Image 1: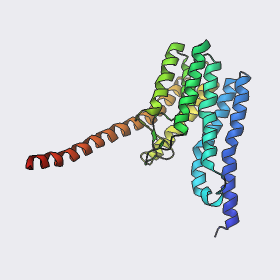
Image 2: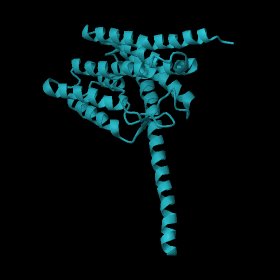
Image 3: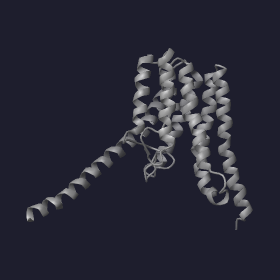
Image 4: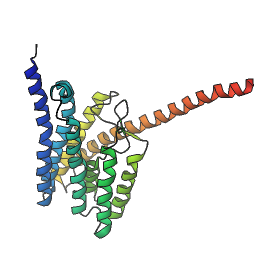
Length: 254
């Protein structure tokens, strides 16, 4: 039987693991200002892996019971904001992906401000653990724009589009929490991470097989969220129709 002390140590070990995200964020920021984008993406990639598994470890270690005075959820949000939003947004700004001058500053501020409506949203996740609205995954957006290098005007339109999606009634998959197709979702996520690493390592060279894996795995995650959105809307319409029918019948009886 596991002792109480062992469980406390395990809980605090998970918190320490999550805290390494701050270290990776710091190193990524230093790499960014040293104009070493590949190194920055390496550190953000490590932070992404930490973020992907620390929640599962925290639930298994029951950190709320055995380390109750330290809020891992707040810590996770801070690390996520740095590594998923703030640093990628600064990266887009420094790389000129947001254009130049005042417009670039406005877009940078737009990303950082609208993302707060994701992190501070108490209903950010549905009951079945989908994200409701764009989950401020600006690291994915920044990586895609950096690899593709579209015109800054296209980038500006996309930034505004994804910012608005923060409030849209559209669901996005959490690959490690959503039960439906979880095994496939995890495999797709791992494939996306590995292919992203290859694309970054060889940038600006094109690695076609890696791009195909990157696009297909990312598309799977995106489409699954859209399918869930459509299914939910359809169920709501059916439910609304069912509610209207008895009322209509009652009016007829009168």
